[in-house]
Image 1 (cartoon, rainbow, N blue to C red):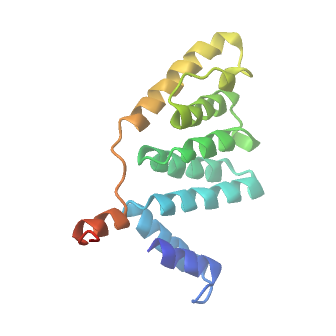
Image 2: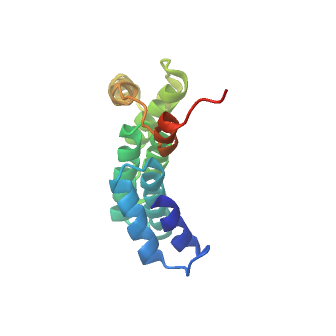
Length: 157
């Protein structure tokens, strides 16, 4: 469903139709496709950058949070970026999500994400980032279609 949705969005192999493409992406996201969830988030983030509509920004963040909670660490960076500019600019949230992204890459404490925050907010921001990271790190990795296919294949001899 994800690939069919992308094909309709791009007009590759089928007539370009964003309505149909987005409907397939939505179906794929509802079925748990992290790629589809990220793509929908990216689309809303693009609309946000074009229109500065806070509604689009919040939709993008919702999709990115869903992808993050399904195990996509890079979604934390996209959330940070969305909070980093425009009509919903929030330095605190941007710093927290940036720190979460850094934790997904290193699993170590980080303080450089909080340098632009007032000193009084840094400890709370660090605790908030650890709380979000603990949700991420306690997840079991999502299984992909290829993981399922491998279960039924005989090992090479």
